[in-house]
Length: 165
Image (cartoon, rainbow, N blue to C red; front, side, top):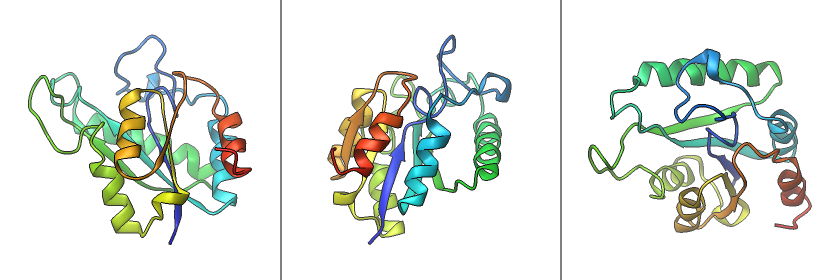
């Protein structure tokens, strides 16, 4: 069984300072510490996944195509660093428009990755900047780590790799 790191996107991978929704490539800025952390996780044998709520789609603020452009941009940056994201799971729904089974804090996408990629939840972590990220992880049997929005996650990465978290 594989071990995995699940990451929230906005506020963890990229900065969301000054923007509630990040859906334009020109607004997408990688947070400090992400690239070195993902390299360390990759070298330690973790599979990497992104699990993100993108409720602005259902609100009509932006489109799934906008989300895909941002994700393609991110994947291009990471590819230059030899970092592979196995899959990006995103929920386009918002509870103010309609309910769904995939919006965090639902564990739907994490459980799907666990099943599809033969992930061992006991060796896996979710790093997010909201309580719903942690709740989603714990409901899927994965250890949830809540960080501050836009915090450099390198210290958490090092603690995970040392077995301290």
